[in-house]
Image (cartoon, rainbow, N blue to C red):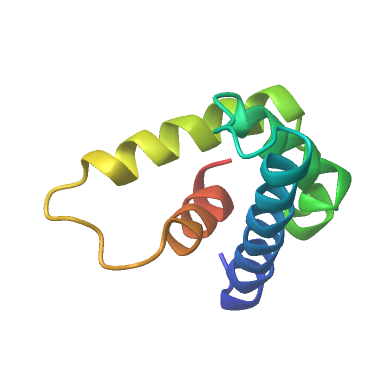
Length: 96
């Protein structure tokens, strides 16, 4: 797990978060997207997360991983001191 790979995944997650915010605002008229992990996963796969990791990544697997990572992040005690994208980028590169 290299720092460069983590940074690249973190940047992709940050870009995905920004794009999803636009999607929620424009396509969903500001309504919270309950299916955000699926949207994030599709976007990340389309934008090369597999290339960043050096292995294929299936959208369904990534969606499940993102939902699980978010739940773990929210339930962490003590509360995580880093942003979710940082936490998840490290986990993706190590576990997915």
